[in-house]
Image (cartoon, rainbow, N blue to C red; front, side):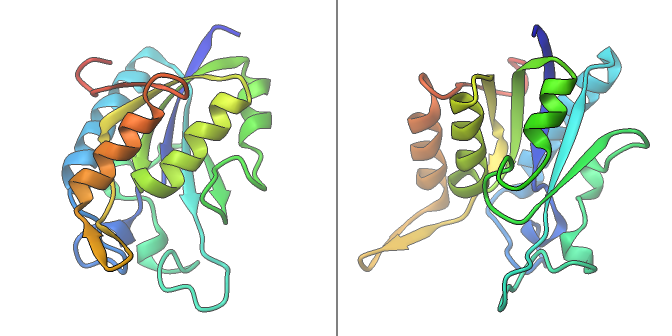
Length: 179
């Protein structure tokens, strides 16, 4: 189990300007994810794209069949690259992701994607719990501001807090350049 794979989580059009759930900094994050993607492709290492489709009643983004649910052009899958469809924040929940990784003898994951505080967090924690060694590309992730108890936490602070919480036990957080 020495093989490593790149897992790109939810880098989809709805998270970009003009989308139904625009984040802060998705362009820079996707450019860094694209850098990692190019590296994995050039080495012939496995790449898995995760695509969230919202099927719950009242969903406002990632609606199946819409342009917003499509994977962004900056990291669009190539022929033969695996696309895992999910309906929950955790990329392992209700998907074949773990089965595919195990079948490919993958023991190490390099992760990038959106949103840092939700799908990236849930997936990285689950991956570590399943025994994968996880490297998280912090600058290849993006999120948005969050509010609680009448206080708004800016996106950069949300992002930093979640990367800090994951770094160490759940993942090694690095930049795309450090990869």
